[in-house]
Image 1 (cartoon, rainbow, N blue to C red):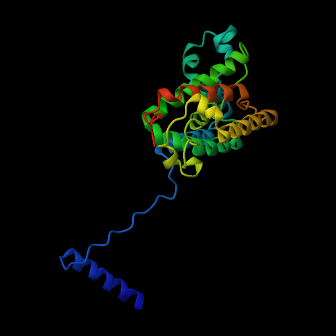
Image 2 (spheres, rainbow, N blue to C red):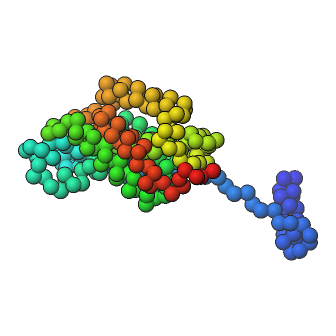
Image 3 (tube, one colour):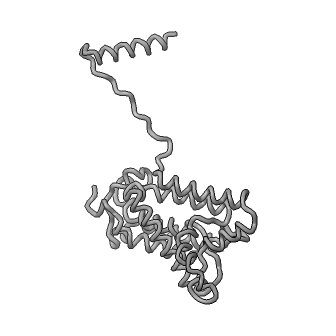
Length: 258
């Protein structure tokens, strides 16, 4: 009863202030979102989850095999017996990133995407992010192609594009006080040059950890299924280098940011 009366008295006082009694109006506190993940990241996660649901529960084996065959990246399409498949040769360097080799593979990638994709998306915006995603996906695919030229090995997974986002994040998230603790703050920090980045102790430690993790995961074959092979370390490396080196072309904030 007491709390209700106090609330009512406060409300009346606030209304009086609005009517010109001399008391300033007390603004309502803004609600902070529970998860501050950009919509483009949510969209990618939703698409990958939907595809995995289709693969596991709704499509028959024939449809699943066709989805992986035409949507996955196969180096043999660019040399040898599969070279006549023009449409998937054009589309699969992008579509393979939305297919995964099982729930374990998908969940790991989507968590990594949320962590490293968020500051990049907040910094460069939706349109630049979409183009950057495509560029790093293609770079990762053809790094894999160079290492496996003519092979019929199937490549799937968003790891290549996410590695590109990771490489991009290395150029700015450790350049100030924001770090990875606050993606919104790190997104406005100045971009480091290549040499500055490579002189950063935090970045070098992270890259070393990233390389070791890739070697370990490649050895374990995380995400491998009968339909698809887990994405290879060559694709990770290609995506990372593309993101690391090409990020300035997409960065509207630049080196002079606070």
